Length: 485
Ligand code: GLU
Image (cartoon, rainbow, N blue to C red; front, side, top):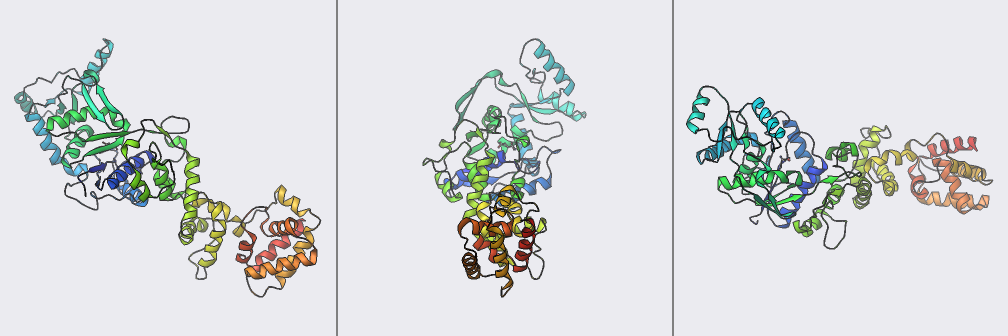
């Protein structure tokens, strides 16, 4: 293990969406590439929005993606606890240190007062920063007021100086003096504000690199000042760009699915999602695009993360998922397909006579047409629920002068079948014999049979499909289509 330590610090307010997951992924890849430690910290100081249930969802989503953490909930580590609400004492101590050193002070201004001051500042053309009313309040006075039951917040004394933040991705950024005034770090109810808790945690957990979304860039100068006041060198910052929707506005639900859980239930594979997300604002030096996690780990570096936002291309993700569906073991793809087929009522995996081997072959015959596993419901209609009406192309085949004799020839072959299913060899022999007896070959032969048993001109290969269909059902289908010919 190296000394490199990074963290993913989600707030547990629901399933994680792709933006956050990409942040987790970059942290994970960076840590693995550097042989460092990947910490999972739960930032649940927003008591109204954080829930234990959401925390569990985050663990599930990360585990499903294979983004396993080295320290954190469920794993432990030498820097715990890893949940902010369990770290109240730590924040209190840090707050006391800032107070004692004169880097923070109690502020008794009420919400109304602050609002009025903000409005007045704006009216007179000044930035709406804190007016500093309590900045010079002697600590002894403040303590007396607290004793008398008043509940102040704690404010950090923002030095009146430019703050320079060095960021691996954005370079050196100067935040001018008036970017912010003295800011609150602990609420009157004792709960620390994000900018404060995050610094205490990053400092005490020895985090060396903070890799997070660039929506936090404006928080960074405040955090840099707190690091300084607490006596710690700041970590290296790397603010990764946003993910945009196809219309180039910030990716959100209205662009489509953005929750990991939803991708999972739609039948995306974790390795496809990981591969796709890795390419959002990062590119490999060799310009390849298809990578296993191991290959990503070997190639990942922060200096190949671009400053510009990436557009989330839902179609490309789908296409990539299709590639991974074709790479996976067929038995795994079948297992993933089972719930969709059961839901559609096509199979009942709980029945004693459920034939897993047959289903596996069925999935194998359809796999090339799948981009996501849930596509299986449509694709499998040909086996379990063929369309009632014939489309135009199928009708055209039906009206060929040779189709009727071909279908009758196939009926006769099926009537001679020795068992419930034709073997592939029996199917081939049957086709040969029909060819001979009808003098038909090529498209008029095969398309006729295809339309006869599938009611469509496209679908799985016939030599795969027919041996997987009970002869009785094939006969029923032929009878039906012959009535329509
Ligand atoms: N809890 C913060 C968030 O989810 C973490 C930000 C950070 O990484 O500092 O946005």
